[in-house]
Image (cartoon, rainbow, N blue to C red; front, side, top):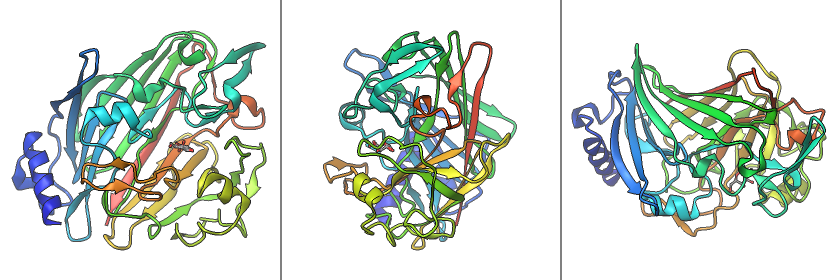
Length: 382
Ligand code: GLA
């Protein structure tokens, strides 16, 4: 903890945040303009910046590369801060070997079977990067792009607008897609993400955020003791390539039943064929509320040891819960500790995987003249 605290203060000093605001107030005063520092340079010399934001007791560091949340600090029940998101302390690792740590995902969150789909009678072949499938937008998805970042202070909110334009044909997708993502920290310390996109040709879009959470603190070990609740009576089982079969299966009586909060580790070793295939949880839950005009509460994550909680609200119809199954001890985080299987988890709000090939799933088609808009809100407590 001592080490953690010093790291936090050093980080805050570098970001120009007064060290006196540290050490326990969950409701520090907000309204300060985000601070920009150089994080690193890409091979072609492009500078990548880190933006530090703080409001309502939540601290966020965001990279212009991939819109990556490099650090998310929240207090525990005793006011002690920890970074609750997995990542790296240097750009080289993000470029060379990140499993989408903290990144914005586009054009399509999760998998499209064989990277193929047909829209208005035309066949499209996407970049394939996960066996036969296209995952998270292909080899050079939005997570591997430099975004234009514009800081703002608006009323009691502090945030960043991130812009990226994906050209017609990029990664095989039709249409020039103009994307704007807004990260906002509210005065209550909520972290809100607003996604917007427009296109000049019919296309498919499914944007999400790939933060790996560990509410006990990054580098502190397994998330199996975290309690998770998901307001979903059904999920989408997958085939061996993790592509949904199209079935909306009931969670009742299966390890996938998180309707009442339970520790993630409770059923993760049940020999259920779906858990065996995915090496744990890596599935899309069909949220009971469906698509809603406004974000509604869909999931709560709680770490009993620190008391930290996170609630997720969204207007999206699906939630991918991924229990960090592919983390294998080969990546080292900012704490200097490695990430092993289940050391962090993702809760990705989304439309369902492979929707472009599943006419019965809610549509991910975006047409010229329409604006894609979705919102996800993370509320922290302890
Ligand atoms: C997503 C997928 C997982 C895995 C991770 C990245 O969450 O659902 O299968 O690919 O991204 O490692």
